[in-house]
Image (cartoon, rainbow over all chains, first blue to last red; front, side):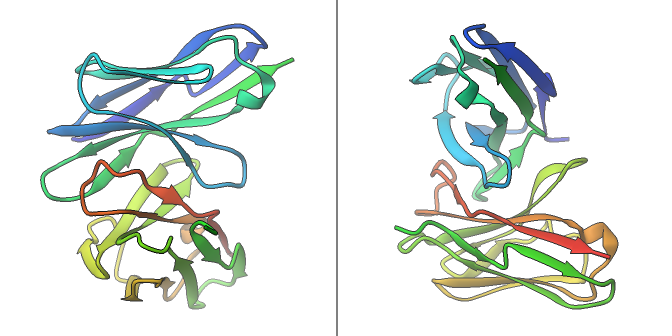
Length: 111
Length: 115
């Protein structure tokens, strides 16, 4: 069964305390791995797309990496404004355009 | 650009009533997606359209759910009759092109409560 699993479900960090979020996937024919950020009461906001194992992308304090089985979102020296739910999603299949989402990691960064 | 527009933002209805959710995608985007988000199941794709044509509706839970896209700038998701288990946040998203590797832009969602 195609599946995306994120861990931990929730993470509390002190400001400046770096950490990583995990996204493991079992899908047939991965075509891309997406990371989104979701703030309370809002829709997900796109962060990154990774297409092949070994690829890395960075944006401010965030860096996403991809292996053949999982992806990591590394947060370096987080700030309170980084608090949000982080979702990963796998694009898979043939001609269809479908994303399967994980249930997310709720990140809280305390000042 | 105003982004993806959804209405209403909140809907409270009673079991058995018909509910219609509306979405206006970003101009120039030709793929449109309807998702449902709950605490238990996360974000689930219900249906998606490409060039106004439904491509995959395998995520639509049952016949009570239907979606239409009469033109490139408007789509509806209808639930008839509604049930309490339909309570969730429904998101509409749009993207450019047909390739799956294009970024999807999400609307603010409609929070549906069925009593």
